[in-house]
Length: 356
Image 1 (tube, rainbow, N blue to C red):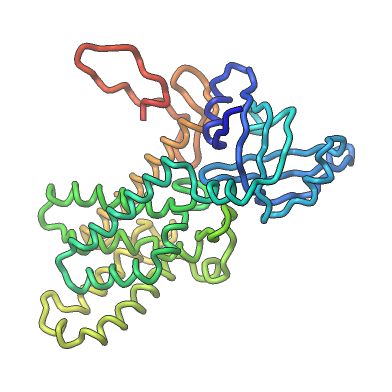
Image 2: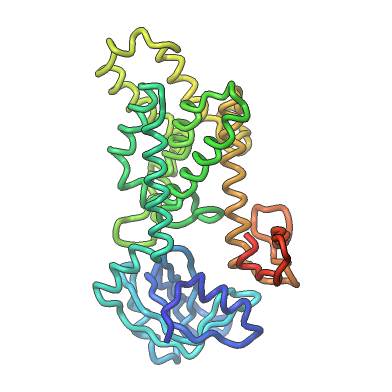
């Protein structure tokens, strides 16, 4: 029986015209919560997660695995085998299912993520480091280099968000790399833009999420951090930049003294990019973008997040009709698949999976 990720099963189930998809999948148990039906009958609700997706499994009290499932914790890694279908109200569901614990080797492979995702994130991480190495301003280059050396491992297992976009282990690496690619392509069209500052701002704009959205080394359960809750990632990011800057400035005060623009100007402009990247005070930024680089970063950030929502929506959202999918929040309405790209000589129409 084919081993599939939750996303692969969800995609297959949504396009199976009502026929269940028989598969097995490897997941971590996020939680096992005892609950009661309206008739006060007990059941157990399992929240399951892999590297990119989640599902809920309801274990009724008359199921042979009820007692075993009730004892599972978020340290449990299991194989779920069954018939999967997509329910309009409850999402992905399993019938005629069985579970077993994963072997240590299977658990390790699960934690690494699917091969395609691992390869993409390795490529993205290399791109980030290459972009940093090309920064001309020695202060910004040293600051970025110090950050990735000190926090690189944590960065690589941090999600860009909890729900809406790149909400997976390593998602922040994917989001950051794609923003840098956009900035590098965009900056030559507007020569006054300071690309060094923009690349540094992109690296640091969400660095506070290393405390808001970091996943542990041994699982997919994103916990909650008191610093993240009480201070927030924008304020944490400002603190991170200032702490690293003070250390590097004290070590390089003589060599940086006569560089133009002055170091203090560079620090303030970088802090502004971090502080303003949400664009509006109502969205959490203490100040709106006041410079071209800050405005560019805000729109690149917003664009990449929303295009990721489209891509994920085409995979997971309920189909409503040909090329039309249920709304994915916070996008403004139902999704419609992209127009197929023109190809000389024509050819057969592509499926929704190939359209974005």
